[in-house]
Length: 612
Image 1 (cartoon, rainbow, N blue to C red):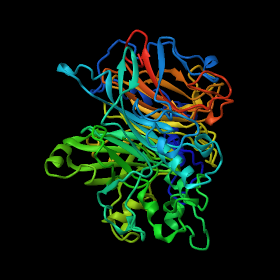
Image 2 (tube, rainbow, N blue to C red):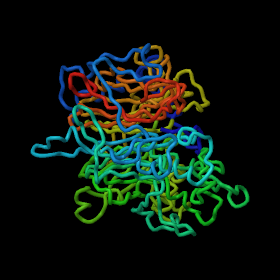
Image 3 (cartoon, helix red, strand yellow):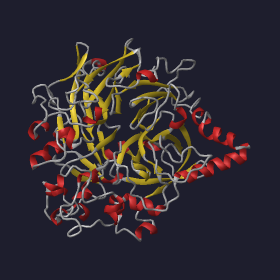
Image 4 (cartoon, one colour):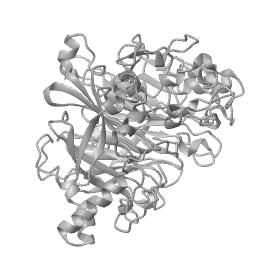
């Protein structure tokens, strides 16, 4: 989820727009005529590849999607709508105590209470079951929920446009970060319970660094302050060994300069990562020197953000760790899978206009690496994607061993800290805001490209310029995810659905289930009178149906399920954009109560699998 509309990529790397044009031109020659070319590129062949491949749960002859879709006419307004076969409940609104005995919600909050309450900006999350007794009974109704808190405006959090004190700043800082909360289904309703595992991780929580950049001068400040915090926690990932990965996205917006042009002017790296003297309006830098770019004592503090952070949801005493081998950029999320030889592979999007898609591959079998005392996310190779005209692609390694990078950077730590600059040099393909990634069980990888209205090269043969509504791309890597080449194609184009009952725009959140369904969540201005929503696509047939719509002004994001897939958790973020005149959700409509971000618990009325 990106709320930064600017591009900071000045490179002349060949844009994905041009690749699409060349691809369509090639198909036009092969198939004879423009209409055939466009149909071939954007329609059924992009979906049918999945059919017949191994790795999917077998449901031959069974329709994957059996629910009645929410019609366009019911998809707007101040209250959510859900398919008639389904029901929803509300869990952990912003400000609720992390545990039942914690400080109760009040508006506006104070800093001490907010540090013990659920944060704002509910986003990516994952459910970690707590099995009880023989045969794992209880795994589907008791677990830890690790949930990101991406952002909350001053107006929403504080009730005013700007902070007026360090206490105000601390309130905002403590509303960001991550919650690890223990939840249990009691008498048919999910609720929080007292837990020694529960904790809040926010901007002032001690963290550690690992991997190639740990201990490097780029992370040191003259003040000598210890590393603290995580911020703008957008999407997420989870590991095969049972930990949570939270991803720092628009971290640049929390920094500013009280003395711009005199003691601070942006250098090349600052510009490439979008730092400015005013930031995104939070004004933390006015009261907290850590975030003042013009304070030389805290030079390099900005390099401590923009990473993927590993959290143990089962042990509140384990310090969060920033895994620097995964690179520093505006991480939307990371989808991990196990590749050939048991190597762990992670796919990542850098969510800004004209930025890139990345991949990380561990150097060995992840189990063997742990046995040898090496963390799989600390040792491996980071790649960036280049898409070619003929539907092939290449993964370009970001390594100091490349002479082109060695000429610009001193060591591998610099390459990783300034991964965007390194990717520019390698000639990666600028994309239309790469957001969530997901790996289907058959090996296909999907990525949402939310939009890019700033494409300025219109072409009648290419509906992607400008790309106001976004699309979804998919690819398959060579050598079971660990190869350096891939084949790609377009899966869905959002603009093609406008005016129909499966209308959607701005795809963002994404999850592929074991049966062949793709859950698609949106973040942006929807067409046809709709609020943001969640749809389900059958990747084998191309069928698309709307399961849920949110409230006015919100974003639908975050997705996780219980092991039996009969309960799904999603989030509504910034309902009404914090304006009680638009909605008061989850409170009853009264036009006064401030709306609160919250988690939505979705079940089928017949107890079936979600999406069916």
